[in-house]
Length: 376
Image 1 (cartoon, rainbow, N blue to C red):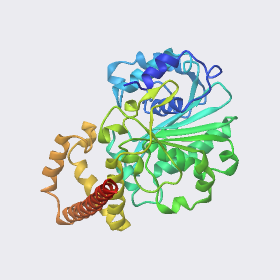
Image 2 (image 1 turned 45 degrees about the vertical axis):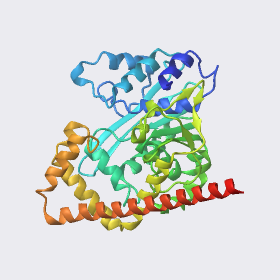
Image 3 (image 1 turned 30 degrees about the vertical axis):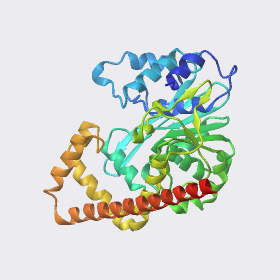
Image 4 (image 1 turned 180 degrees about the vertical axis):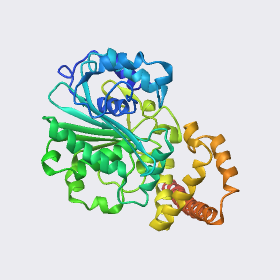
């Protein structure tokens, strides 16, 4: 499998003058936003720092100050710092904050590409429990604090740097990129060349009717892996490109698993049946829950998770060990919390059964049609 690392090794010696900005470059810069530069960059500092110099600063950090989401992030940064394509790009206006009280997790960085344009990259969900809670809050809130921060950040940077703009992010970062571009003033929207949404979730239905969203949708480039689940959540407009992944199931959400060939992605015709199944199931489930019930379910779930020390483990609900801790904690919860959890899970089970039944009937009909074709 070849991925962004191979791209950097094969094409990293080509500057933007020799080979214009590519979609894979957009993914690399959105992955770049996952770095925690809090010990090497001052927040909102306008002074540009070369990526090569930044990579060296991170490399020299003592182990106790090295905060890493994924070890592959460090590999990416070092390869960027050594490549002629990225090493002279400059970083500025880094911001990174988590507010537990407001249930907000937000980080962004601006990269001066050296061709008169700049890239605003938003971080996706980090390892904090509050970051995951904010993601779930999107299911019942019209907008969350990170989205407001993302729009304010884009306007702040656009007012201070001239030139055309590219915006992007992975996962929640993709959602933030689309949101910020959709709600910013028209003068800034006209400067935006492209918005990269890498497997980011959608929005409440009201957002799709917003004029700024309608104006920007033609500039949104959405990419999802074959078994996408996160990128299919909630409501979207516009098309998307399906990228082949070296992983399976939910693990395809990892951008380092996306396959690259030459200067572009390895693309497929459509998402998998698994992706379509969960897309229909989760949409049906959310539709069966009122916004109030969604809020109760999410609050109850994360109240339990906060007692399992998931935030300290950095695994939230993604590991079997933490799932077990969650079930153990649930036994000691009050009846109202239990009711909210079990009511939400029951409706999820109902939605899963209905979708499975619909797909079973569809497959049966398809088999019957094929049989008729053979007889003819």
